[in-house]
Length: 151
Image (cartoon, rainbow, N blue to C red):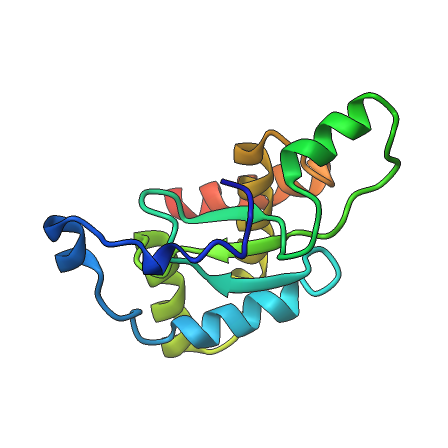
């Protein structure tokens, strides 16, 4: 589903999923605000998502915007030049998002969290089947993150 306006929270969940539906971890709202600030020109909005189960992020079309798959098809057939900015949806229960929120609440805003914002956006693009906007910057960010994890 590539539509952001779908109201998935109104669908009844199985019992085991209802147990997992818990409140957002502390600091998630601050992280989303920082992601909005960091990605302000690259996305239409950043918001928490109830649709994501195993993924940290995804890109969706905002309500009233053209579906992502239809837009891609029209671009392939040269019926559309450019597409609309997408909404980055964040899974607040994913360990990566919860860890970033915790880091932000402990250390405050940092270049590290801003770099993570761009990595998350590029990850969402890759998963969606879209090209990364700046492959060189993506590779630099990924290298830096992996080096930090090794050290």
